[in-house]
Length: 135
Ligand code: ZN
Image (cartoon, rainbow, N blue to C red):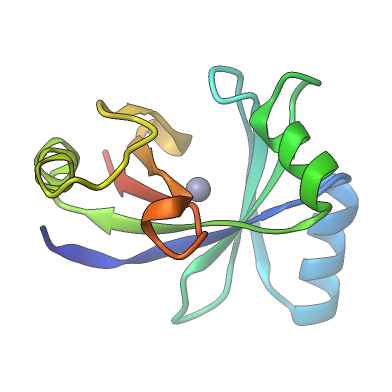
């Protein structure tokens, strides 16, 4: 399996609008559109900085969201790293064959019409990893 690049680092936040304003104002970064992903239970906004992976600010859409659980267990902070791959199905297949515990064995819908899958944090030193195949 081959990674194209690191796509983004996601940060779980309680107050999305307030957080966007701070990142943009303090660091001069550029905020993208706010997007709701009801199937994932998240509202998110990509914050872009030249030449580096985006930051993805994520907040829960409801109490049963995994991000709501993350916030109550850990508080705000780094939630996952995301790597872009060419062929997500093939990547998942290879990881599965290699005995890597996956959260999603098949891709699910992600931001901006992408297809994504999460890999269990116990596979990578306690860090939740997302793979994305862009549209
Ligand atoms: Zn992500």
